[in-house]
Amino acid sequence: MHSSFDISKDQLPLKKILWYHFYPGIIITLVYLFISEYLVEHGFPGLSALLFIELLVLAPIAFLHMGWKGKQLNGSFSLKRVIAFCDKLSLKQYLKWSLLGILGCVLIYGPLYPIGLYLKDTLFSWLPAWYFDPGFGTTDMTLIAKVFLFAIFIDGIVGPVAEELFFRGYLLPRMAYLKKWAPILNGALFGLYHFWQPHNYLAIMGVGIVISYVVWKKKNVYLGIIIHCTLNILGALSGFIAASGGELIAR
Image (cartoon, rainbow, N blue to C red; front, side, top):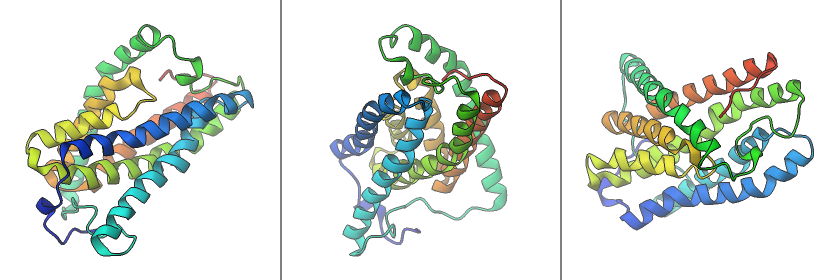
């Protein structure tokens, strides 16, 4: 996926930047609204709808879009010259910047997480309970734990890899003309694209900006994948451990 062409000749205008950041979120949210109630009515916890979407909506949208771009650039459906930030790094650099990115995300997300819970109970209290409650629809904690177990793979690997390649590997390099504002705008738009988590906008935007900055600085999308996957795997694992013990972690 190494880029062998001049990315400065393949920049996106602001209108397309906004559209490409938002249209996947619009589709994801519409499908989420359509299938969540159905799954809940059939005894599946609310989280199962999001996992279904990550696997069968988010990932296909991201890879189809990038593949279509690859066809324009290469004449064939591929990711060649699509993912631009693939600079080589030493193992020491990977460890250093991955740890700094993870630490930065935790330090930002931690204080903003309670704000999200507050907004959920106030500003967004009109939304249905299944919109927020990962266990809504069932009292079977064994089933909920199993869903979180699947989340370790789907939300911990599939979703983050698709998002990082699309948002940080494909879109971010094509915002280079914005200079220092590129990672800030990319990270903020990444947060806003999560229409299905409006109460967590501030936290996700903060995390998005940190990851975008790390990827931008080192010109390496794999750092974003490592950071994003690590955070999501830890989150899903925490949910699994809590559910296995008969409790749920609010989100």
